[in-house]
Length: 377
Image (cartoon, rainbow, N blue to C red; front, top):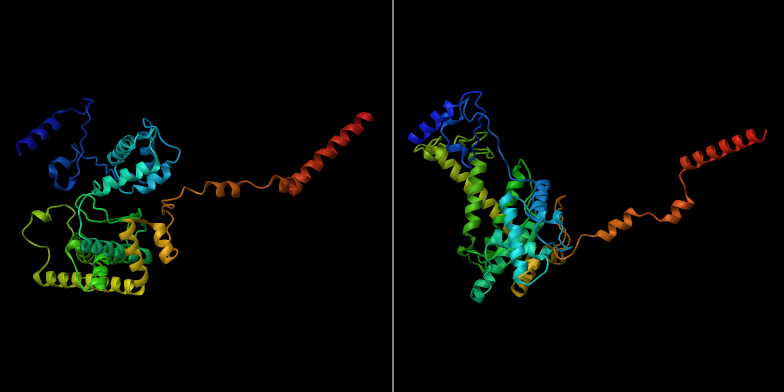
């Protein structure tokens, strides 16, 4: 508190014409003392959000300047590949990709080097030498295949980028998805996300008739999301249009809940009901696509890594597409097709000029003819 008082004293000591501007930055504005935010102190607050698609593209271009880049690298592709990345994260991706390329004695940094760098930053260091029992490996394969299968068929779930059963960091398997950059989220979108998250445990339950501890992170995320839907966003008929969210951030330091014990029981019941419904929904989707799920898991066991095009071969084209989905991971952008579409045949242009151009040419010819006749006269 003495530090705070001294800071306030120093800030109040500057005159209005002293030419001194005080700037400060924090990631926890909710825990700042209110005295700091009063008029005359830090009264102008600017919320700096994570960079969007265009901003990430510009940040990539800045950090890629000192690096020798291969022709296969597409900045737009990398920007789409890194949603939720900060400027520091993007700088780390560029640095890590250069290290990976140098490790393989490459003269330039290629597209795959950038993808490997993104994977390492998101999932951690790859541990190919980690010994995993065959039974555990099968459980991991079916778990990840369950996530991928459900995300393929649900409209609002994030499209798959790739799935691997190679251990990374503390995880035994991982799936990469492309989250949609949106400002608001609907109930349907949140329910689809919950269903896809529960797909791993549902797949284990259906396939082996037992469950494992591998779904710990999934259950944690789903529980928090369901609790937020019920108690923060007013997405429950029993609770109604009420929100117990405290934007000041003081609620976590309080010993009293903003609702009664009876309401707390209702919230717990609604959270459990919401999760149970989505768990049964996940099982239903997997039962309908049992053959594809098995095929996908077997490919994962064999290759250890699969991409979205592998799912397209198994299940067919995804019934739901999004405008910002990634191009195929194993192919370059279809530049030739674009060129052909934009390059009309010159013969057709010569044989079929526009009527306006014809009229203009005829008018010019007649005008020249009149001038020549007047000169001869």
